[in-house]
Length: 195
Ligand code: GAR
Image (tube, rainbow, N blue to C red; front, side, top):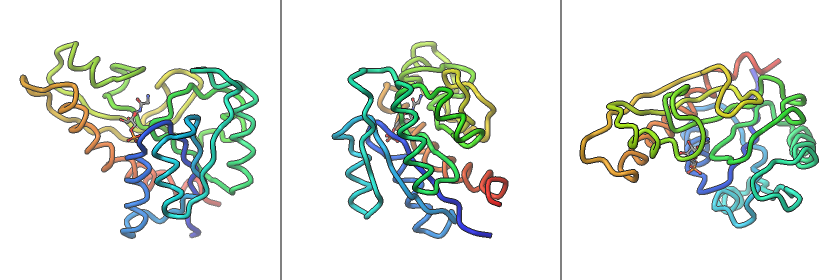
């Protein structure tokens, strides 16, 4: 079977991109990252990709601060198709994906979210979890549909919430699990995506 080709979209630090790359380099994930794109021109994720020779480019969101305009989604779809991506992995991408991109990559866009979905969709889910006083938090890898952090789940991991947790300690504990389950989720779904 050939190697699955991944496209990655991220807005920030790129630690989940790094986790995918590390798993590939360790021979634990038979995949290739063909393109990284970000809506944030100075995002660390772009720097990380360029540092290892992976093509990385900025998405022109036409001046919108939070919206992901249709034209930009068409741009991303075209660039990902040209790069030969089989699957798009959202890795801390903070804009809502809609029809234009999903139509070109149906059932082929996945996301990692820092909560046990369906609990705490949206921004800074670890803060929502701590504020809600839950005893268990975690992360979810799921297929992306046009909703916010909805779509069928692929894998989840739980972490405990301790009484002395801060936002930072809880987020770090969740992220450690994110880095473990994201490559695992890709490995799990890859065979069905390859022809
Ligand atoms: C991760 O914790 C990811 O789960 C979250 O953004 C962070 C990105 O970190 N994503 C969401 O909240 C999506 N709704 P990273 O840039 O270091 O991978």
